[in-house]
Image (cartoon, rainbow, N blue to C red; front, side):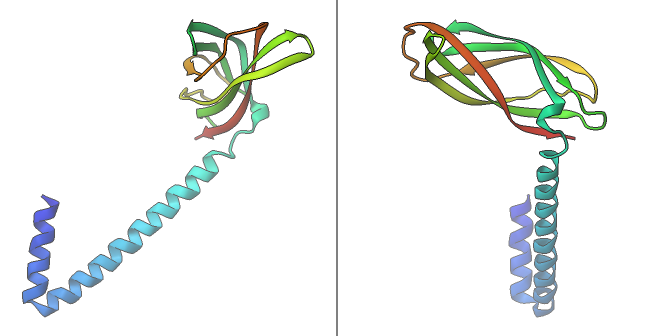
Length: 155
């Protein structure tokens, strides 16, 4: 449908010089509107990453459950400590280590995972997310893991 309108506008601009000027002005206005909308979205996206700090996010009762080689499920509870903003999503970096002894651990896997969970201010929600690691070697010792919150998107 839009392509038909565009073709008709080009034909009209070709045959009617006055319409050509109107069309150029319309294209300019649309270009400025798209630029303003893009800048607004970028500003809002940047602001959403700074509304809640890492200290306001509490991931507790976490477990990493093995489903198949390289596939795990992260289970836990996510608490939003902010009194004003809702968590829309967050990114965490998970690290797997093979520990032969307490002081001798080798990192065997690392991935960054997005968790799409909406948590209103001051509330807690359950988290259950599948996590995939590629090319994990077989364990020589005990599997240990930890996580770090990388980015928080809030509204």
